[in-house]
Amino acid sequence: MHYVYVLHSPSFNKIYVGETTDYNGRLQAHNHPQSKGWTKKFQPWIIIHVEEVATRSEALTREKQLKSFKGREWIRKTLLM
Image (cartoon, rainbow, N blue to C red):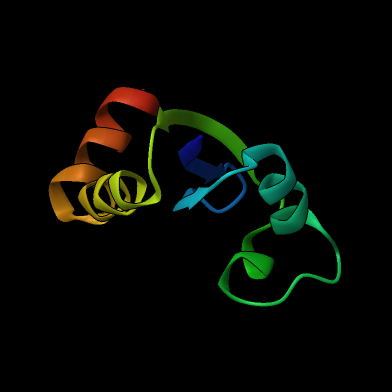
């Protein structure tokens, strides 16, 4: 199984959308003190949404949808209200 996940940084009000086969492991990686990249600046992260899909191709398609303007608008209106 593959998952599309949405993380939220309450301290900075930032959203991160990603895909993985292990969303709990990815959350730990994003919150690890020695992590690198964009998410490091906005720790700590919490998972606010997870969708299970059958294939990586489906996960990448859904990730792209959620990263679009309308997808982020849906996240803010639906998941962060």
